[in-house]
Amino acid sequence: MWRDSSSLSILPAWRSRLLVMLLLLGMIVLAVRAIYLQGFNKDFLQQQGQSRYSRVVELNAQRGKITDRHGEVLAISAPVKSVWADPQKVSVTPEQIQALARLIEMDEEVVRKRLLDQRKRFVYLRRQLPPEIAAGIASLNIAGVYLKREFYRYYPTGEVAAHILGFTDIDGKGQEGVELGWEDVLTGEHGSRRVIKDRIGRVIESVEKIRSPRPGQNLALSIDSKIQYLAHRELKRAVKINQAKAGSVVVLDTQTGEVLGLANYPAYNPNQRSSIRPGKTRNRALVDVFEPGSTLKPFAVAVAMEVGKINADTLFHTSPGLLKIGNRTIRDVRNKGTITASQVIQESSNVGAAKIALLLPPQTFWEMLSRSGFGMPTGLSFPGESTGVLRPYHRWRPIEQATMSYGHGISVNLMQLARAYTIFAADGQLRPASLLKQDVVPAGQQVISRETAQAMSRMLEMAVQPGGTGMQARVSGYRVAGKTGTAHKPLEGMRGYSKNRYISTFVGFAPVSNPRLVVAVMIDEPSAGQYFGGAVAAPLFSQVMSGALRHLNVPHDALGNIVTSPLPATLRNEG
Image (cartoon, rainbow, N blue to C red; front, side, top):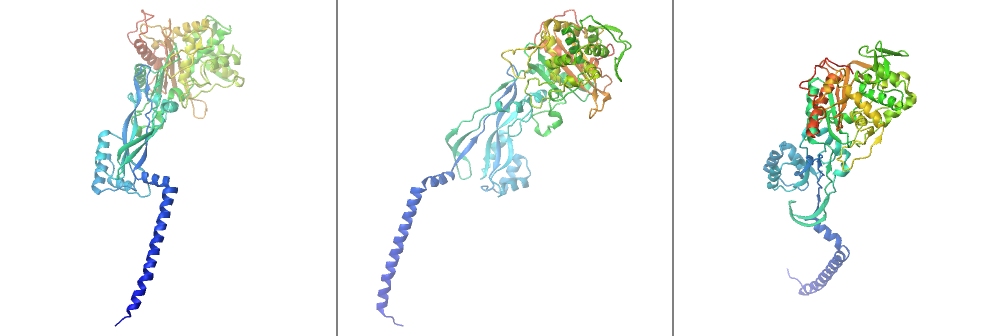
């Protein structure tokens, strides 16, 4: 078929013009787009470009150390690595999954699911790894799997100081004890830096440090590690020997108010978070309250002496060993006959203490107990600390005022009881208690006169001499003063008292000539036959006080007082 050659010469002309116009239009669009992007959206584009290889990485701050008063480390944070993944960036082979699962000791299928879960951008695979395992993971070169620097909290003393220190969670936040109470001091401030990463997320270059991490402050406790170990060891032994439910020991420096030892048992190991149970973590010496029994008698006697109602030789008739107040009866273990105020303490007479308390206006007795720190915080700022119960005096009935003289109808924690006894050891002054090492001795509050305090000290010394209830509290080479306590435990709901469940206590100080330490011990529900404070708590006091005085190199003040063996529990077991 033949075509007209003129038609072929016309078509290329308009086609060429159309093509030129389209090319010009395209160039104009590109030019406008370039101007818009480079002139008006430059910062956004640069940011997007940098985000492909530049990252801001958080720098964890190291938590402050906790030490004892001599600088011995009680809690420290060590740098470790944790492994995490961004499932949307993960590129992994079955062999790599198998190797990774073996290194972090996890089920292979669990690891695979975590790595390939496209709904998430961050998932931990394993926290706080040993260095050799972290190095093995890094050598696998798995795209989307990263190592993060963290800190592991370690407690060198294990269970010995667990109830004081508490512990942190896996993120380094305090959960109990000092770790919780002083969280703001111990926690540092995290920093950050900008880095360049390669295509699989590994850091290949540090560009700049945006903010340096600020480590937490170190904390020096008042605790003496050797006294703490001694208290823990002897308490553990006493709880097991007496087949008791639990127990606590407090050791106070009478000159400064510092806590040198604070032990509880049962205990727990803060290095093993998986084995920690709530019932074992509370600091019983500060959180639990109990009726102090006869350890409260010295306070009734002291205030009666202070206001001139009695003196050490005032006689009290306790026959026939009971006292009726209304329809209630107060009893002694045996008929003690006519005894002096000093013997009320020495022989632990409930009848004598009740008669002394009833000589006082309720407000006067209440003020003495309140000034001694009962019903109030100890000043330790310990989380969860109980203040106990000291009811308002205007609500007291005569029977309640009488029973309160021997520690029924009032509840205290062991730290309150130990601190209160410092007034007898420190010429009548009550100093603030402290869990932190003190550079300056705080001023004390005068609760009773120096003369009354010294008179009470002599009475309390009689209580550990022949004829007293606390003979097993004696310490070889030292003059000791103190008081036993035995109290029935209240029934649930305060429906009276149990007949066969007891709290056994002893509180005392030494050496009497120049008191250095107050030691308070409490054994909860001893069940091995003995339950009187003189038989259960006093021997524990003796062991702790003896070891602590020797450790502190406190000079002897009773060279003739050499006890070679424990006294039989049957000699004096009242109170």
